Amino acid sequence: MSAEVRDEFDVVVVGAGSAGCALAARLTEDPSVRVLLLEAGGSDDVLEVQIPAALYKVWRTRRDWNYTTEPQPGLGGRGLFWPRGKLLGGSSSINAMIYVRGAAADYDEWARLTGDPSWSYESVLPLFRRMEDNARGADRFHGVGGPLRVEDLRSPHPWTRAVVESAVAAGYPRNDDFNGAAQEGVGQYQVTQRRGRRWSAADAYLRPALGRPNLTVLTGALTTRVLVSGGRATGVEYRRGGRTHTAHAAGEVVLCGGAVNSPQLLMLSGIGPGAHLREVGVDVVHDLPGVGGGLQDHPLVPVVWDVRSGRSLLRAESPSGYAQWFGARRGPLSSNLAEAGLFTRSRPDLDQPDLQYHFLPVKFWRQAEVDPDVDAFTAAAVLVHVHSRGSVRLRSADPTWAPAIDAGYLTDERDLDALVTGVEKARELASVGPLAQVLAAEWSPGGTVRTADALRAKVRETLESLYHPVSSCRMGVDDSAVVDPQLRVHGLDGLRVVDASVMPTLVRGNTNAPTIMIAERAADLMAGRTVDPVFAATA
Image 1 (spheres, rainbow, N blue to C red):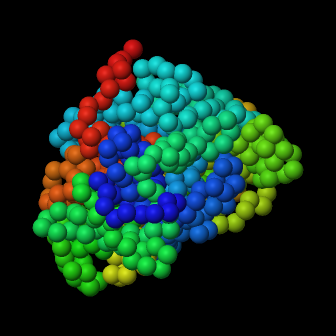
Image 2: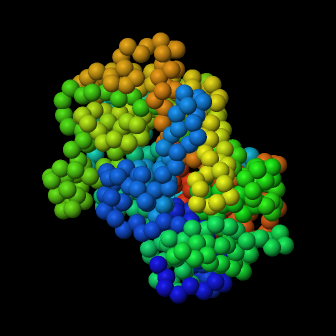
Image 3: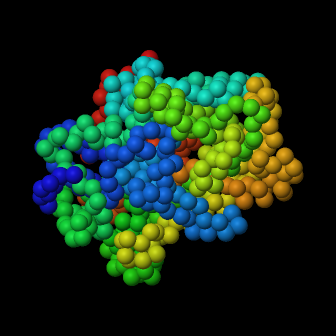
């Protein structure tokens, strides 16, 4: 995006996704800090990004890294598609815009695992409030005036209201704010939209900062290696316009590539498990065993019903749908598809919810590989407290090769048991209240699939990803941790990782908001400042 590029900066940030956009914008609020932001993809200025309901139309295009996992033994050898944004805004430009932070207990666990109380819920809550511009106004849990616009859906589908009423009839508590005093219960999601249009991290953070003379943003720039000299990261090499370039960092290099690309880049740079690096022909610069290990993701099982009557979002792209969206930014195209949610427990003895539901007034099947063909309704049962672990590894020393992603789905039997319960609970909810009047025959798993063994087999057959990979550059103080609680790579100076890969554990909920919070925290750490007390004040 910038015409002239010098090669000396204070900070080089790799990846203009959710974390990279937020970090670059916050760092350049100080006019003395020169920042280079490198993005392998291109512009986000396309209609399919802006229209919320068109989100899946960006998948499998050149604006998507378009990853596929290794064949998963727990899924009968299936490999799952993983969309990851390859454009400004990263995955915040192609996601379902759901604004969920996770449970308070998740952050208290981070604080315990890292030995750093500044990652506790009460410590990160001011960061969440600072980044928010919530349409509902400010309170103990929410902020206004921040970069990230958070709103209620403008035109929720009638079936979404039916979901909430049916869940209440089934005995679940109504919850109008999953990010408030309690997470458990049913309600409509808030979304990262502004007046019916997607509001990505690029919209929120990067675009307002583009005019700053101390910020340089380059798209179409594939970073191929972190340069290390004398135990310190000194810059990066990147390819752009058919040439290899070098950018030097007087201060720090910060990787914001996400849970796939950040460990990949570390390993391409010789930073990672020594034996593995030697196997693929990479010289070992720093033997760091935990790089690429501990990968986690949220798995889901779609439960799909035919409907008795009424229209799903199948016809959202009708002339009237476009007229409503272009005219008033309302109507079915303003939908994020997964409009309502529920957090609950698969077992009553659990301290926290381990199941999350995404209710979609449309048929969502095979990871949107094919467009919906009939009017239908989907309840996606998501496991949010995951025991299984996987890994990211190199296939080659060539940076253009996609890495080998082993998600490790269902390698821990407890995950399978919880998802079976998730399907059963979805069925129970659908059989009561107004939703029971909407839904007809169960299309999948199918009404005849009833026994425990049959359900377990069906879960393995139909499980999909919710696209929330984390923890492959885990934060901690143990031998397998990759970064310390200040997000600095263990054993090297001048190098941090700031993205979802550093999460010590997978949060109970969607990961975009927590990722942006991590970038806000990193900006404070790098600037040597504490949280503004106005945001820390509690009601």
